[in-house]
Image 1 (cartoon, one colour):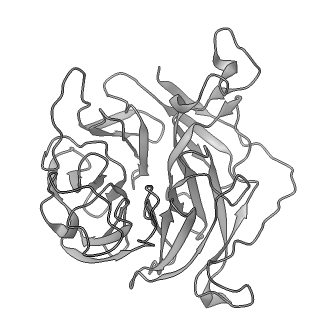
Image 2: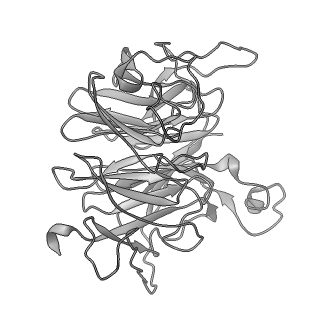
Length: 381
């Protein structure tokens, strides 16, 4: 059943705010690292209302108002976690939170909505989220039958569906050169000047695909290095040697202020950069020697300065956020580690940045969203 929008009044929370410095990998504390420094804010967000509990939280996005949008997976919660929602209730806690949640900058829930409804096909497994210049909310899913993306108003009214869900017993083979449907798409970004929606169509397919954000009309697509994607190429992960010629789980996607498309090729542990027309610009590997199957480049975001000097890359395998020079793609530092306390992650998955330079991360297995406050940059030390 589709959740109706839920509007929440702001609630003041009196608590002791403790912030711990997050060290940069490989840098002595006595040295000023050549990268921004962040501190976790353990009091953000505020406690959820309505006895809600979060499911897996694969993606996060910050809109132009510095409101933080989180997409969650209510269906990943087990009965013991949602006991209060059962009939009859088996315990006092809890109720699954709706799939889409909007927080204000202070961490209060503003509204929440999402789920199956009339006129569209809700994804089997929620994944990507993006809020465009018109405050429209784009949602995607990476379930086996999810071959589409959805567009809603900011308060959850359906606007557009691009692609169609695979309905059993249909067994149509997905194709990276299909111009109508996607195949378990991951990241979504809308480029405001051209009003085009770019999709990292990467769990099943191996490409970036672009549609008109108003009509949903197909515009173009491309694979690694701007070439035609090939679904028959090997999906074996490589840890050394020549760079792979095809994407291998294209996951995160963001477009910079200067019109460059940055994508996280997750299983290949690399970043590739393109112009808007698909022309290849450059690439760089991120901790490529890491053997963990989750890969080291899951999602990307930019620093908030006008030049977007830094590129932030989620390294799920090493439980870090890597800080890269956006121009050279050189790794300047990192922060984070495995753990269950504030500032640590069980499985960091998504990343976003607000206008003040603060970072927000979401966890697909840790079931939470965290805020890391920007404390300093090399320029103001």
